[in-house]
Length: 81
Image (cartoon, rainbow, N blue to C red; front, side, top):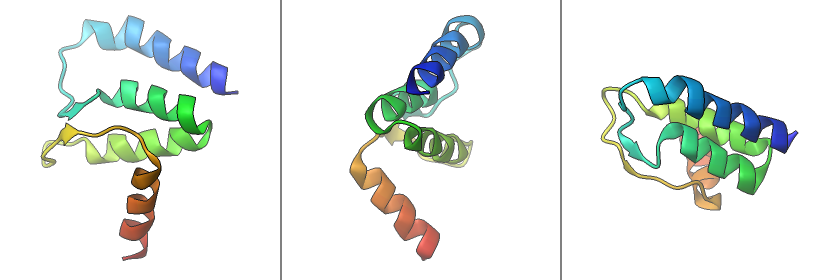
């Protein structure tokens, strides 16, 4: 399952994302972040990537953000607050 998600993300990066201007305010890009999260956390990494896509909008500050266990804890805090 993890391998399938990684293949789909790489196809997106190669065929869709490569033909569009970069607009992601974060580093690494949202697709790279999701790929790293899936490699590290498996299917849970997809939810981390989805949360990252929601945060990546014109009103966000952006910045450097790598997937980590702390990001899951921060997500829980925000959802429960």
